[in-house]
Length: 126
Image (tube, rainbow, N blue to C red; front, side, top):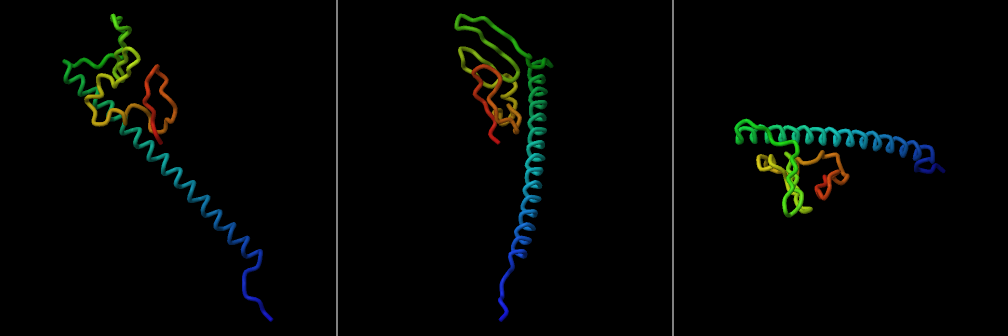
């Protein structure tokens, strides 16, 4: 009497081939995600560049300040091109009004760490 079914070797080979195909496709998906984040980063850098150029056009050709400190009665005020801080409050800097989505371009899309500056709460979500 002949039995119909798969042998242990056939099942093992089928599982091995399936595992290999899944591993290859996951690697391809990861590479595609990395490329997408790279494109988004390049787009963010382009937006920053265009915002700086628009700022200069609106301010007699002067680029935004790298960083300025002002001692005020309410405390130290820090003014830079990418942020403004006073009394622990952080808000977007001088060029962000020249962008469509200032919070989107503030950090690298691959960054999941907290900002390296003071009370800046902006974080990127991957």
